[in-house]
Length: 121
Image (cartoon, rainbow, N blue to C red; front, side):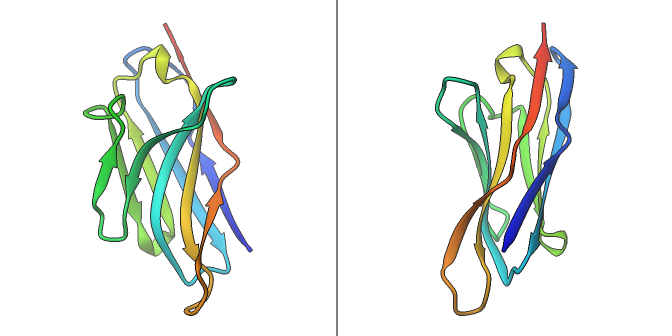
């Protein structure tokens, strides 16, 4: 099986920064696209940022110019540097990855358990 574990969430004041980390473990042959999502209770889970195997990135409009996604393939990790945080960024943040367990298996979609980010005004 594959596990994704996030860390780095917490409480920060408006304008502050946090760096989220997510490390994959288990039976892994390769990791394709990695993503960060966030969810506020009662709302749908929304995509924040993606990074592909080549390092190309994409961001949602709220994340552009404030958040930076990166990955370390050797560590099977993805990161989200969040700067200039607003109270509207308060949410549970989830990492997500497309993982191939063997050379011949199809990619499967995995989620972490989430980490809470709270931005106080």
